[in-house]
Amino acid sequence: MTTKFTTSIQPPEPPPRTGDGQVDPEYISRLYRWLYEVYRRLEQAGLLDWDAIDLADGKLGDLNDDIGITDFLSYWFAVQVVSADYTAGSYRNVKVTGACTITLPAASSYSGYDFLIDNAHTSSITVNPSGTDTIEDETSQSIPSNSAMRVYSDGTSNWRIG
Image (cartoon, rainbow, N blue to C red; front, side, top):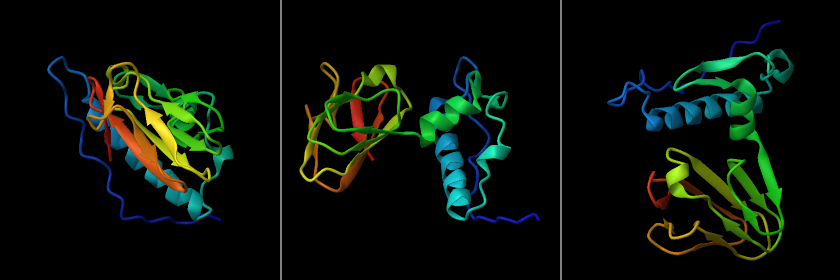
């Protein structure tokens, strides 16, 4: 039996190119967010069959390079649960369950990337940037209990909240 799934989510426009012919990193970020939303809605509707996705050989496409579906799914859907100090980087989604400090990687090394930090702990947690980087031009940010914050790199030395 085939179930039809319709959605009003529109894919991003064709990719803009940078001066050197590469796909614009902001486009890649928008594409990933779009794909994440499609997968999330399919999963919520009970229509996503993870066994039907060939994780071993599948390729997501040829953007700047071939991105394996395993890497894509790991980055966008995996959640790192932490209860002690943690430096973000390998996982896009971080869920905090204990008193700790989250340190972001160097913004210049993560241009076009974002992190979602979910504070499920009973008190506020602190998010620090790496080295001399800032978060919204501040040296740290606090996330209240049962709140979340998404930060994205400006590509140089600042993380933006959004």
